[in-house]
Length: 112
Image (cartoon, rainbow, N blue to C red):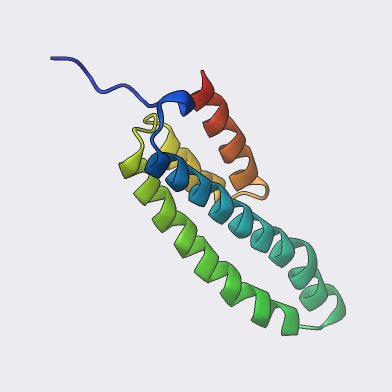
């Protein structure tokens, strides 16, 4: 019995490419919202006493975070992702610049 091998970019179907593109878009949106929250909204709140930015960016980031995790799980189901991809994608969503690095590493791995 042969073991299922992870897909490569050259062997992906249209639906799988669309799923990967959606994951990239959601990762970039989630990563950007996290950077805005950490780099702009929180300094405004704690350094200048202006909590309004956190009250706007925080919920947007929360929704994008949940959406990113859902898209990651759906993509993992549609594409035979390597075993490291799902936990790495979740871990990356907790780190600044993590979704960008994860996207780069995942696409690099799928090209090989």
